[in-house]
Amino acid sequence: MADTDDMENMLTMDMGVPLFLAIWVAMMVAMMFPTAAPMILTFAKVQQGKQQRGKPYVPTWVFVGAYLAIWTAFGALAYAAALGATELAGNSMWVMDNAARIGGGVLILAGLYQLSPLKNICLSKCRTPWPSSSLRGATATAAHFAWASSTASTALDAAGSSS
Image (tube, rainbow, N blue to C red; front, side):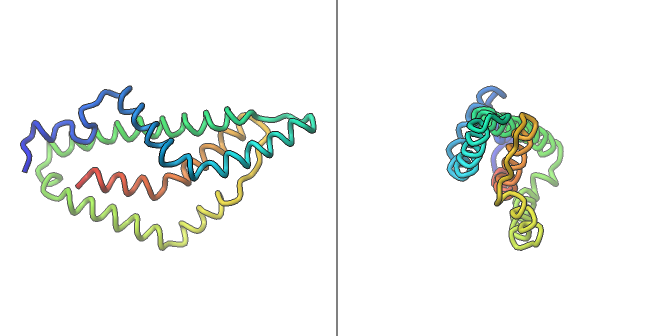
């Protein structure tokens, strides 16, 4: 078992917020953009058609920027959660003694979600992208897609960092 000094900043890997977020965004781009690409291309095509017809449109960079901003904000929340978990673990031997069980429980919950009707309900909302013609709509679309993309991966990331 590692001593307390080794455990102190393990979840944040002893990084400050800027470096953590930079690595978080690089990881997100590497892992999530391949699955986001069809949505981004669909959004670009819809918006290009609107632009050609002279209707209000949202540039694709706004959609992608909103997607990145949402993931960056989620990374900041993950960093804060990691600091909170580190503090909790440092103050509670029960948490330290049961970290593997907690991680296993999170994995079981993620697995139950994968088999639940809720997953299909969530997927039915994001499988067919809806076009948006305003900045607010583009941001909402990006937020929805980022949330839908992260549902299972978040649970697995949390479980991996707690064991």
